[in-house]
Image (tube, rainbow, N blue to C red):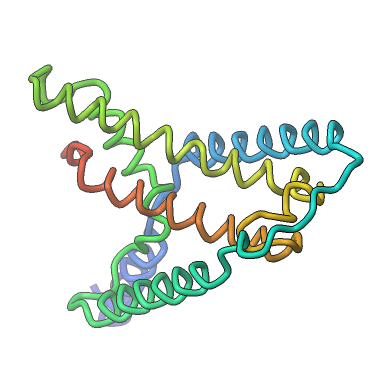
Length: 198
C-alpha cells in the first residue's frame, strides 16, 4: 500500500469518526415533537375558551429577579461544562446537551424498563424512579407547546412568572422548563442501566 493510499485511509477513518457523534433516537425525538404539538393544540383550546374579562396585575407576581438569578446560574453551569469538555484529553466527545435525544439513551431506558439486569428489588425501584423522571421529561415539551398559543391569553401572562408580557412569560417558563428537562435527564443518566455491549 502506498503512502498516499495509507494517508487517504487514515483521513477517511478520521472523517467517519467525526461524523459519528451522537446518533439520535427517532422515537425519542418524534415522541417529544408529538408531545410539543399536543401541547400547542391544548393551548389553542385554552385560548379559544379564554375569558373576555382581563384580570388585574398583582405587583410582585412576576418573579423576574429569581429568573435572572436562575439564568445566571444556568449560564455558569453551561460555561463550566463546556470548558471542562474542551479541556478533556482525547477530544470533547459527544455533546451532553444532545445526549437525552440519543439512541444510546433510548437503549439504556429500554434496558432499565425491561429489567435487563434482572427483577431485583433494586431494579424495580430503579424502574419506578425512571418512570417518574420520564413523566417529567414528557411533561416539559407538552407544557412548552401549550404556552405558545395559550400564552396569548392576557390572563395567562398578567400574573405569570416573567409577565405581564407574552415574551417575558415565555422566557421565564421556557427557562424553567429547560432547567427541569435537563435536571430530570441528568438524574436519568445516573439512574439508567448502562448500555448493552452489543
